[in-house]
Image (cartoon, rainbow, N blue to C red; front, side, top):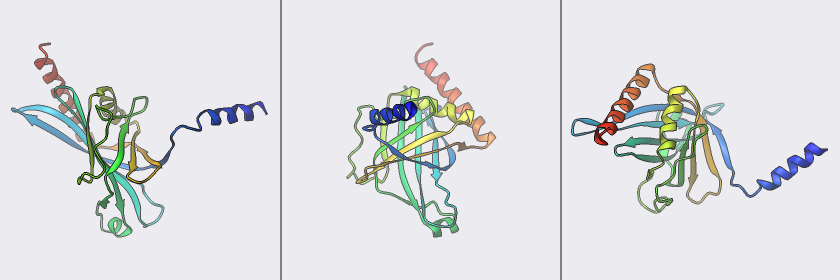
Length: 199
């Protein structure tokens, strides 16, 4: 009986917290490398996620990316996608959903990414993807670490006009060769940080 009372009290305490719909996704990764003046200036990963249905039917997912740039800025971009049964049958990536009001990425134990000024781009702007700069490098670097360690990442999306976030989760699939290239990119970027800061 005491356990029931404790559980009820806990539910009451967190009742006002926002909740999201958790959705397991198959997540494929694609590397990105940015160059400036012949040197690595940024590294990133594009994440294409899909909620795999039990049978051939319409489903949903996301197409997002995160990048780390010199001189220590993160860039997050993306949004949700709608995938029809016909898309699945013909191996198409689906159709972008309207630009989301909220987009965040998070690694286990880390804080979620968020805009540097705390404000998301206006939902009526014409782009279908939300894009913002973040100065919280710990959250971005934790995403790289999660991929290297084979840990799941989360992608949170709140579509415009909806009240419940979709929180997709899963491990990012990358080939061993891609892991090596990503590690090399980050190492070069880190060396560039040290050179430019005089260390």
